[in-house]
Image 1 (cartoon, rainbow over the protein chains, first blue to last red):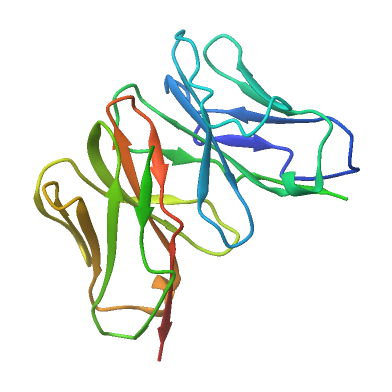
Image 2: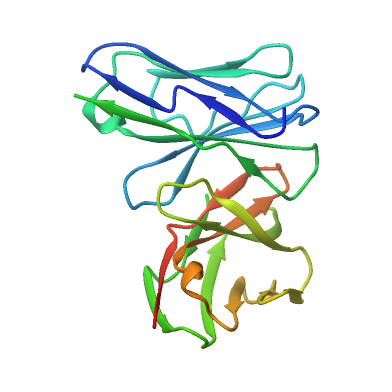
Length: 113
Length: 109
């Protein structure tokens, strides 16, 4: 696609429910990143995929968070048993392998009640 | 681990010049990037420095000193539309990008 596409754009859920956030990167981009941005804060690194290599999961804050990337393209970030502190904007970005420029999606705003 | 420091807020007058500094600590440093984010929007790429020195792109310039672990973003001829948050980000040799907490720039008439 022309840009990085994320869905849903907004998600309101109840505490304890599971949520899935989707990212469709730019076609041909082999690198894909997930970040979390709390209100008025910086971007917190979550996970990084590069081609078919094992993902770098070092930024995932707890075992309630997981992500997968199917076929080297679409990625899904799953948050199990959501907590109120999970409320944030989840941003996905992609790039060509070895590139120094990230292209971000518009983000998925998650609100946990 | 990684850490980046930048001022939380800066205010400048339309037409003026403003400099946003960034100091960093990281292992396996590869380069320093700058991103702009308007309220409610996605971060967008502004510049990248892989080598020491100044990179100029129109009204925006970015500088890097690897020996000082320091860089800055220089915005000239400020316009109201430049009011946004600006993030520095280090790229390490593992192809990971780590972002600072951002600087909120307010341009006043």
